[in-house]
Image: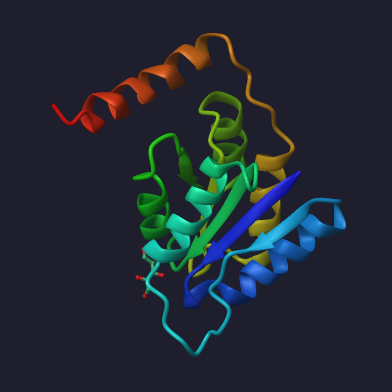
Length: 152
Ligand code: RB5
């Protein structure tokens, strides 16, 4: 599976650790920045890049990191069709893959330690979407999006 990674300046080290972790497991990782911890990057930019890469089919899933994971997930969630979930423990990461069909896991580099982040990542990537009644609920999220995307 191809996975897109994006972060702001606060999370460059964690991004590298998590990319290496997934690569060891055979995933192909694409880095959408940021690259330099000394250059401040506004989190909506990498959030948008990874979300759009998913919608274009360039990568299947994404990992987004900022100080809290919140800002970058909020930005990604503005892209129609994207479901990005910010998680600080493995249970929620597993459940959002299983019930919400989230394509993006977001984390805060100032919130979680490196080892916990790896566990969260594993919980997310080792879990399949369950479908069934959960697909109907995800569809209702898409309906809300469609309602507010109409121009008339
Ligand atoms: C950057 O200082 C910080 O605001 C950002 O990384 C993130 O935590 C925003 O949600």
